[in-house]
Length: 577
Image 1 (spheres, rainbow, N blue to C red):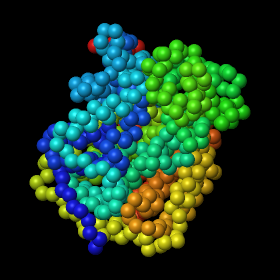
Image 2: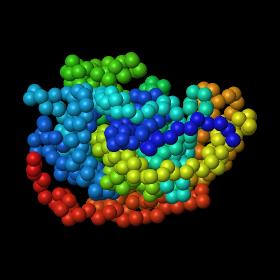
Image 3: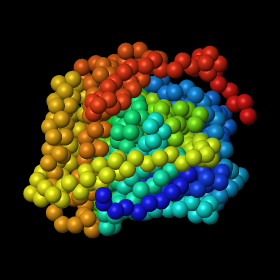
Image 4: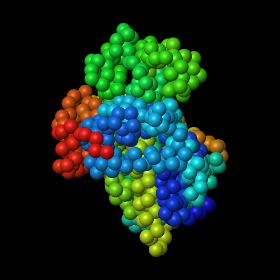
């Protein structure tokens, strides 16, 4: 048996973005011995990419705003596939979680009266996004980290978890390796919180960086947890398209919130043809598809995008409100956004589907396993509103940490760890070193990304998706023959040999779910099924689990909304204080 380091905790949290930090803070505050494990360095989380703001219905700028209107907006954007209870909890609790963040030291932009300033964003009825220029996510991470380091939890950086461990039907810990030197690590735990973020690296063009290989989805799926609505991958409408080295890098929606206009190569504000009421501030699925259609019709920019123009706004205001965007384009594209339009196009950004959780506790169908943030599912439905992600991770990160802590502290005996599971995982990890000259993992990764981009992307139809499912199966066969050279020390090729089986499993769940949903709804658009089955109320969630290595999919009715909440959609909602 390969040697490994052993650690013992009540709660381990996998992922150190906003959801993971908030969960670790809460679990530790309850008295549970807690560890926070991150694949990269602390602070390098995709939470920092949520630049535009955190959505919470304070009504500081538009007094008529309240949680009920936020509830309606979130459901309309999600095309009514959202879990009603999750949305209710979220919209009611978001304001308190933001105020809590402020008490911990977050410095928001202010109104003249000293209240938290709020800006408009796509799909929101009122100015609702609390912000810190265009660096809101960075401020959130800074605040949570500075508060969290005093809470007593341990941090393991540059540690990749490759398998969840179980004792019968309950969780017993996790196994992984240190990326620096490949040493194996066992984490015994009574509870595990998944807060691993997204899966953008399954696609060729993405705003996500190397960490986002879908680990949490795959770990849960492999352990027997259920996934839901995996067809709903959000393509953010505005990513950089030039130069090639930065293709896909996020251009915050705050640019449009501050007055940026979308124009095609003819100089037309084309959003008037797709959403004449909300124009540039339409929901992300509408804007992404509009840009795609403009480029397909030959009205795109020289590098295959469209123009995002904010040159009509005062340059000093742009540099104050959007400092990160000015710097990003100045440094990476040699372009001054106060004088020249930006060339942008859709980029794979966020996953609305994910691990199926209970709204109240964030628990999965496996005892002791919880999920929060992007890896969880239920809040966003078929499309996520911009700004909802940051308040999502605050609300449900807290709930997941609290639930995991309670469960762990209620267990008198620690669960047993199956040594056979550990031995099997270690052997799988080391096998590629015995196949030097085998299949190249980087070639397989490139093929996967091209496949998902071209056949399971923004526009989908049956034949290409069926081809994708078949081709994914062939790529899976190749992963069994992957080989690497060198040692376990600083070896990215070796790291990829373990990421790829996870990536291919999750890519298959996306492709099969997309193939089965024979309608267009939210971020899922079918050429061969142009309209939703039901224009108003979504009726079906698609639930996936793994059985004997096979994808098993079932359709379940969306939970019925109580009459008092359903009534919000039929009458004018007035501010109730």
